[in-house]
Length: 277
Image 1: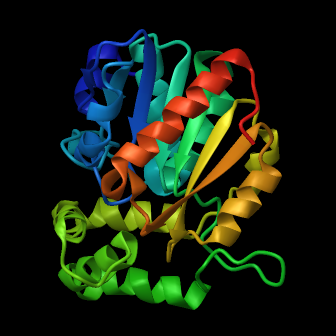
Image 2: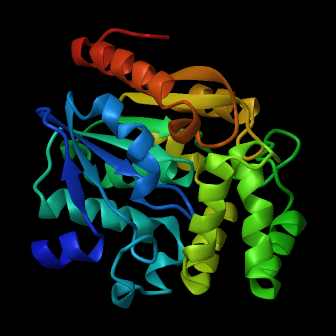
Image 3: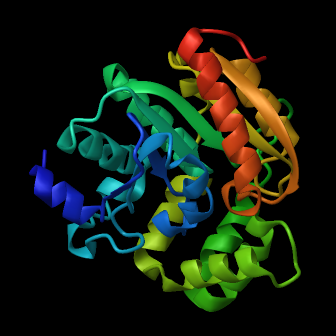
């Protein structure tokens, strides 16, 4: 276990807000903690918000990167665990975007006593198709081509993926920011994270969940379809599913006020043990 100060520096940990309960926000693949800035103003008066960058992303300490450690999602989950221990966080609400929903689930199952609940924004436990019963959205050959493109034309890869994630081919703020974020991420760490994200299968972890879970799903999402939301809801105990009438994979950036309303309603119900199904 690294020293507390080392973890805070390593993961570029920042804290904002004035609430009593802690909310730790974990960014998705190719992103960084800045992507939460649209959502945090909606929640910072109610929660003490902890922001960070995974090692290899954002302004983290790249010298601390290990290709072996971060070759699977458990390595990223260890970043969350280290932060919770370094700051001695208790009763934590883990908010994860995309793959970080599953990373947060891995972390929560390792330190359950520190976790209050989970909020999963556009989650997916497996991006691979496994017919006939599971459609994750991509065939292996499609993902292999995407990974190969990172080697051949990294800028072209970023320009292809960003509109897919944002949900629109039109140039807008979210698409431009995603493109810039993808382009600014170290290609070596990005490729390793991409493989860990798109070729993993954590469906078996869903039934082991023991915390209240809010699933936030876009109505139209090329990376996580409505099928995925239904699948996660059916297979995750203590979960509730909210479908937002929106396009794209970044609800926290495109619809922050609506995301905040769902989180606030979920937390009110979770505090008193009510069902919001």
